[in-house]
Image (cartoon, rainbow, N blue to C red):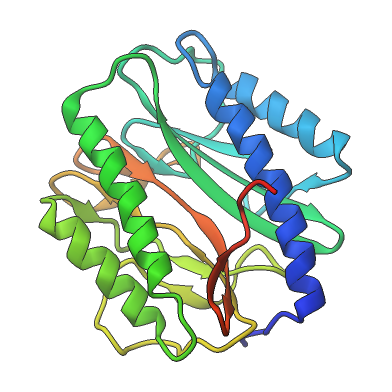
Length: 251
């Protein structure tokens, strides 16, 4: 069931999203050579609690997720566990975070390069960021989730990269994962028709060679079967009569 959000709750989501964006800004600055996923996780938890928020991922699912954020390194696509392994130059690190504040939840992700990264990985990260922007442009009243996915897929494949298909974006706001699903591929005009008040997380996950993935032995980390790096970008978006409103941006 799709739950439209009231104008009041969209403002709550915007406040939560601004906090999350500020925390992600801090996480990106701290993602440097020698830092660890555990370092980032501790920072995120501290900042959330300081602001009266709660991490949306901690304890989520089965087995319960052990971190406050997801830290996915290189071939880890998403849902990577925060670890004690130091980042090294050339790594690319996906940082995915969500938080609860004032009864609503938001979700956002960024991918950052550590030190000097390869031109191929720079291209991967750039394409993934642009794919998110292109998807957001399609988040208009009267369009469909298929319009979003088609636009993302068409762009990514034009850059000779692959969209991960087994994982998709989602509704968000009152729960971390709600309807509708928002695939990063598909046919224009298909899927759920977007109306004012729907709030969705658009999150392209992009990799090289093959979109195939698997779950690692830790029960959470999703890994590219190719062993190649992947990138992930995400924003929480409100569908409004004036166009898409990005909620996970700093105030």
